Image (tube, rainbow, N blue to C red):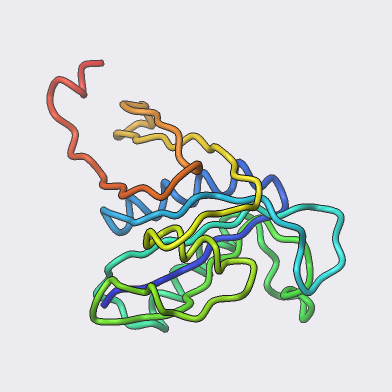
Length: 171
């Protein structure tokens, strides 16, 4: 099953979105990632802007299992879901499943208005006018050694977790 998902953060968003993308890449092995944009909060009162992006991933997990994985990630990043107002409070990480399908084409999916341009850009049907943000993405080996660092966020990108070669281990 393919899933169209969103990531949002307005508490230390550069750190949390970057780390979440890396964690998701490790979990799924590959992702189709949209640009990363800075937006004003929607449906809540906050002085903290959000970083938002979309991603498409394939998983054998059922939707409720995948959502449970995302909730565990949110909690690990410090989100307090015990507050009944958690949907309108600032958050370090929010990952939502927006749609699922047997195919990876979500070009006609319905998303919230602030994500419309990201979805259109992801499928080559438009441009994003919100401020785009560059984030570092680290590929790590055991013991946390960084073998590759690249920048994401300015354009849609297909990401694939690379298998470490012996040469990469020696760097």
